[in-house]
Length: 295
Image 1 (cartoon, rainbow, N blue to C red):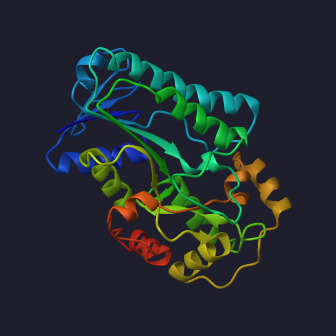
Image 2: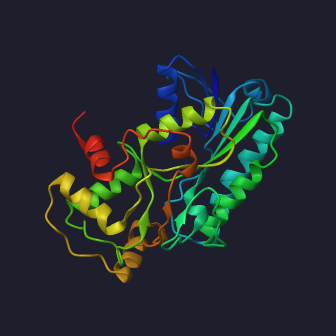
């Protein structure tokens, strides 16, 4: 099977490419900076995208990292970096429709979810702009794109070796800052990288899947539980909490968005579990231990 990964040079894209190549698939990565020496082809956005897309499985990951301050300029950058490539893919697909279009999105589309359990039937939130606003614009850009079948993968925080999310949390815990963040009751939806790869393969291969699908562990946890799990895996003692004012101050130093730590969503993969999907790493502490053990 041929897979085309748009914006596939980031951490998730590289993991997907290596996994698919190892399974014998033909992989093409569309990127602004094609390179040689990788075990898959790379093509530029100015190439013959229609020919590449025709009959393929397209995985659209294009977009800048969200880990930046929530300024109007950054919201515009994050939106443009997702919408413009998606529109370019839709235009190219008119000349060569992919068999399957896997549109990556984010569970941040639900904003601050509170205590509600969120499924694929839950409506997106009205804000904040850097979370729900960017996600809604990204999904809207793919709506109606020519393809045989489209799946919108609203994805949790994916933990994998060498990724910013896992590195930042392990760093904080090792520096003695592994206590709860803010109130600590905010829900965290998360996913082990191995399960992310398996979900992508299932979405690509299962004709019964279309529309919105949650790519997340069936066991969301509260922030305080997550930090405690990291401390146990890393064998660190209890740590003092980080109050919300300190989170907001620290986010300025780290040049990130405090809402990434202070808001939460209790999302569950209702469609996948309803179809019998088996998660290899459904429990957070075991998943962290698996990722942090020496390779």
